[in-house]
Image (cartoon, rainbow, N blue to C red):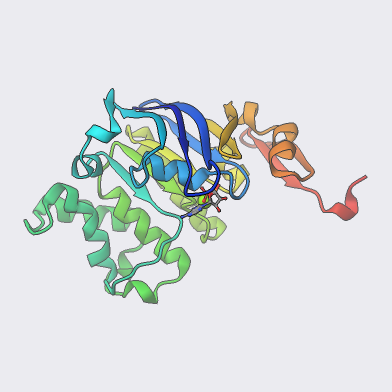
Length: 260
Ligand code: ADP
Ligand code: MG
């Protein structure tokens, strides 16, 4: 699906991504984890074509990303940012509907199929009741679900999510992750930045652990979420135990007063 070869990127000072290579295969559910400032959002923006690498190459389906027009790219790749602020005053329905523009065209109007896709996404995410509200009236968590709906109705082949559940309660978090997992099982490739290590462990088949713009480890949750890897990258003491129900590694933090 996507190949990233030896890319580097800097905003203005030092490198934020350095000599990073990775491959995303079709149908995967990949989680990107790593401490604050390690370059997770930057990597996702590079994958979404918002930013371009200063060196190295990125390709999708064998084609260099630079050669794919933004319009064409938007029909295949949807990106949900972590910062869900909206500059203009849209209501929820108008905002979600914009996700269809890469397919329907800005002024062509929406067909029956488009409306069906929009209604289904709103129903599946449980946000139908918000459709007449204005975006600025929503809570952070509601806004996240609306942004996710907009990304999903784009019907991409690759879905890029930057901390999609950071403002959601545990009930909404697991419902939303279940919806994303269901789409993944129906052939959608997903790459998600997740700050919650246990959530990443439960849902992602493969994890990429970033530190200082480089991949420190990648592999299955069992390979990546070890106390050594987490302590080395996040600079804190942790315990890692198996979730007795799923068998996946779970991370427990330890307050310094209890550390020996
Ligand atoms: P993460 O998502 O892992 O927290 P980011 O990719 O957002 O990390 O940031 C990586 C580094 O790049 C940080 O040091 C951050 O301060 C810097 N950075 C992020 N965005 C910008 C920007 N727009 N301009 C300058 N520096 C930035
Ligand atoms: Mg980030």
